[in-house]
Image (cartoon, rainbow, N blue to C red; front, side):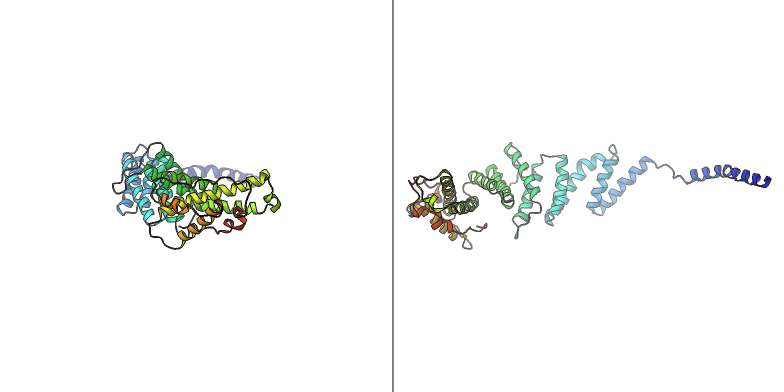
Length: 353
């Protein structure tokens, strides 16, 4: 029993003896406090070395880290106000040259985070996504949402009076630029099956730049899609209802829609045919457009093409569109005016003029 008590006392005494050594060892293991100025100098040197090697992506990350960690550092002003902006431009242009839209968008968004109204970057990103993706063959809509975002912001700034940095080789034209951007948005809307919105944008583009046949081609193409859908809906109405006099309101509404969309095709495409009359064309798109216009014009003008050639010639020389004079409403739908028997059978024209 006496031996057991001595052992317990020895065990209790042992930790007390070891404690000073443990504390002392922990203290010896602590690293020495770093000199803040030395740390900053090391961070700056890391950036400097990467920049000297022209490893700009790495240097950019080191520069941003330095600015964030040492906001009052002696080199912050140079990095933040000069080096970072200029190097972003280098990296942005490299992304464009490499057709790396993801990198371009990432860098561009960094710029916009600091300057949301940077019109030059907004225009550049919109145009590059449009050129390299939306209008590629085949089209790529991976960044269509970003394209729409940048395009809409650019349009608002331009409509508000802001202009991009002057380019002597390409003078800025407000209306043509806005029409160009309208088309970009229309392409995205068309892809997203928002035909009415796409058509609205093409109409607006054509009103801003009435000598550009491309906008009238696509306006007519979308009206043709809507015409074919309206004609199909009309044909599905029982013949007895289509032949009745007077027409039921819903039947008349269906026929009115057919006529409205037919007129939309005619007015857009006679302008397209006029503007392209003396221009070389490739493929058979123009001849297909002529065929559709002829059929629809006959459908709307008692099976006659009288006046069509004159209408196309007027659009060849007029600075603004010349539309067909709407035919008088017939007392009753005649056989020649039934879309089921003529114009409704025309096939959609390809998206490419």
